[in-house]
Amino acid sequence: MMKRLNKLVLGIIFLFLVISITAGCGIGKEAKIKKSFEKTLSMYPIKNLEDLYDKEGYRDDEFDKNDKGTWI
Image (cartoon, rainbow, N blue to C red; front, side, top):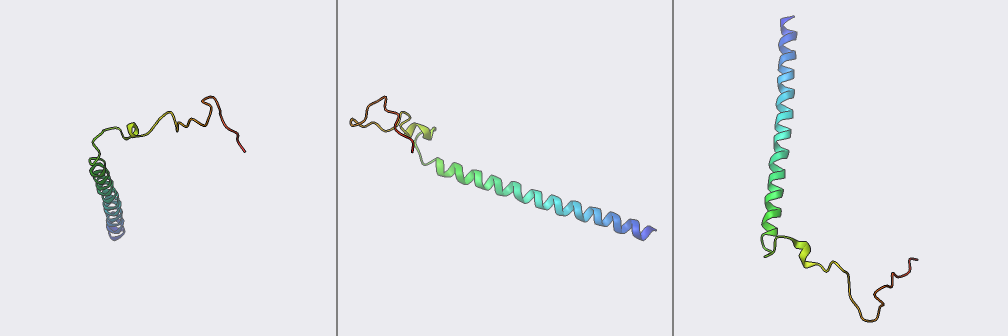
């Protein structure tokens, strides 16, 4: 009876360790990705990259401003 209890306790401890190690590795990887992304964005002089894009769309004199186009 005592041997079965010891095996059960060891099994639970082993399972807990495996889950802890697996979860811990994911957290480190996520932090590494965020740091890499921040490093890439730090090259740009502006904080909001959406400011680089024309929000009103492409302007061309050939097209009427109110023309919505035709969906095919």
